[in-house]
Amino acid sequence: MATTPMAAVDENGQSETGAVVAEAISKLRRKERVRRRMDLVLSVGTPIVLIILWQVSADAHFIDPRIFTPPTQIIRAARQLISKGILQKDIGFTLARLLVGYVIGVISGVIVGLILGLVRPLRSAFSPLFAALYAVPQIALLPLLLVIFGIGETPKILTVVAVTFFVLEINALAAVRNFDPRLIESGKAFGAHKFKLFRHVILPGSLPSIFTGLRVSIALGLVVITATEFVASNNGLGFLVWNSWQLFQPDQMYVGLVTIALVGVILTGIIVLIERLSLPWLVRRKR
Amino acid sequence: MGFQLARSDNKSEFVSNLNKETANHIGAQKLSKVFLGGGGENVLALSDVNLVIEEGTFVSLIGPSGCGKSTLLRILGGLDTPSTGQVFGCSDVITSSGRPLKSAFLFQEYGLFPWLSAIDNVAFGLKMAKVPKAERIERSRAWLSRVGLSGFEKTYPEQLSGGMRQRLSLARAFVTEPDVVFMDEPLGAVDPQTRLLLQEDLIRLWEETRKTVLLVTHSLDEALLLGDRVVVMTARPGRIKLDLKVDLPRPRNVAITSEVGFSELRTMLWDNLRDEVEQSLEFS
Image 1 (cartoon, rainbow over the protein chains, first blue to last red):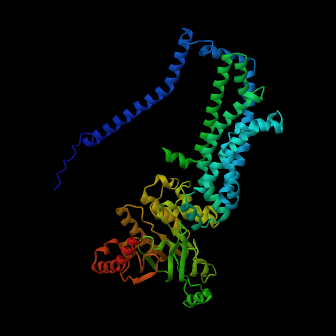
Image 2 (cartoon, chains in turn blue, purple; image 1 turned 30 degrees about the horizontal axis):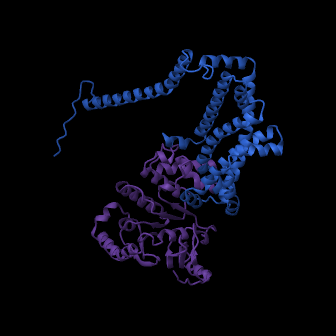
Image 3 (cartoon, helix red, strand yellow; image 1 turned 60 degrees about the horizontal axis):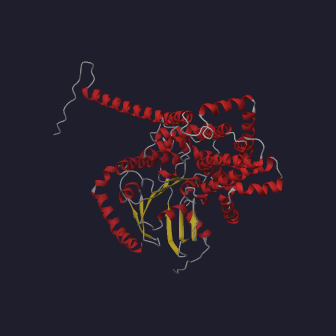
């Protein structure tokens, strides 16, 4: 016979083992809480420490403050740019170009990618061609676009369209091509054929891959529009950075760089948020 | 690899023969299936298969791996087409009420859609059949509770255990009130203990509803426990080797697997299957 010792029961009617387990659990919880707080402190604290180090060493002339403008001076420059309305205007120009190009590229890329994934003859005809074109850095198309469309908004937007289109086309195509055949079979078995199969099985199942494309291409789009504005624009954040170099105003250049970084972070954050809201099943899987 | 397939087009004759029996049977005659293999080699998966599944019968289909039993199920269920021969599937049978037979499928748990909640997974077939939303939800909810998943309506499949997912698949298959249920190794992915429980669920469900069922399984016990008939297939190319009637009394439960009559049937099945399994090992 097994001789399991009976748990002693205290005056509150609770068993001793229960109390021990509860204490063990709260200890684990406390440990986990401490770890999380540590993560947070490190991730926020490290950049702050680096910025302070930067400030201190620039003030002490360990590094050349004319090149490595100390943070306080960058903030001052930012204030000036804002008070003159320059920074807002440049953000507006860059965002407008980026978003118009992004939306056009996303819509066309997803549609073309899905169609190529579903229709074999079209895939055979265009997929290798698109793969080859994707290998050409899209920014290299800019001179050609300038020749065709002249200096204006169109060629700038089109470079963003190009990079977004290819990323989404490739992701949507891959999603359909690598689709779990068991789910397609399951869809057919329960009466989803042709358009219904696409609408209720293939499309929802392809969304994770499409969202990956959305995240990747917004970052690439920002890179491309910045580079485009370096050379082919007289406004926008790219122009701000490039012009500051030509006028040797590193403080303004830093303002431009930081703003570009912030725009990237915020746009990516918005897309991640939309992803979480539209794919709750995927978010729960990751947890 | 060379082989020849007899081509005959007397489907109507086969169909009328089946129809003479008047009941809603499904079946296949002289059925063969060829696949194009990867290295330009053809694979004869099924050869000259004749099988009739009578209305309201539970038929278990068993055979060595790669013998084409899943292919046979998929062809009978209308998910694939035969290379030669005749199929008399659900869409070919018109019931007395003037509609074709309704079929449903029970796959391993992976057939569930990860982006749909439990209740939406169950309701999927009804939605495709354009059942109104209120009715769809009501029927799905009823089936979820019938398989013990009340309270998990909004849960996604990945958050459920393997056994719960399998119960969800069960609800999804039965909610459409099918005439025929095709089960392709439905319990292959769950652990042995859960499997026993789910087998009892299946027995209970079948004995309550008496649908026509074709079950593909690797388990001798499962085939005998659930089936009115056990059909044994040969190694590739798959043919019907044995069609065994299981005369065990109903209602059944897992306890009968330890009875003498059951053991005798199992021994006999294994005697027949053993050579085929060995042969399939030599091939691969």
